[in-house]
Length: 116
Length: 110
Image 1 (cartoon, rainbow over the protein chains, first blue to last red):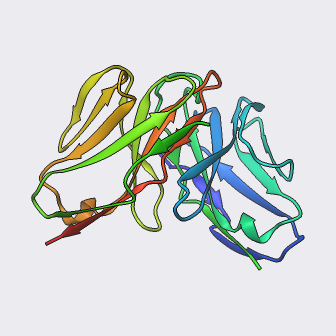
Image 2 (cartoon, rainbow over the protein chains, first blue to last red):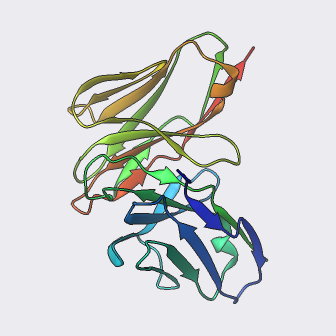
């Protein structure tokens, strides 16, 4: 069974640009959640999608957005990039979703974004 | 606000036992999870505690005390491959969002 796939793995952008990151969940998983990870800050929850609907959203500005397609693949977009957006962006899939109980999350290896 | 506290770094010797603590302050509580992340790798699920007590999975055990808002991860018979960062995460509100600790870097010496 293939794991969670994130693309691209690494990217460099400049301030003011926008970026789109992609996540393909494990086959059969309908929940995809996104996280920002920075050194010493743990993981910060961005949003969760389940069956193409955003169910939860973290405390991030509107520059951060996402969507999920009918095949459960998800994308997140960050517009008007700032230096502070440099981070590892992780997505995780699960069969039950964050509201479905203790279902474990399966993470991709992340997309490392550097903003210059 | 909601927060989780865990030590930033713990050092132990190969073959020994180590405990990583996690205390939480959240508006609600729907379970405590632990994840392991090696440098450059993806977080991987280790264990979940929904009720008070000890959960054992091989060399790893996790404990929860809801009255103390406290849990810990216990790693026994430490191996060099256990060198990684360990994160606790709590489902802490009605939206079932996961709130994460900042992570504990476990350093294992031979």
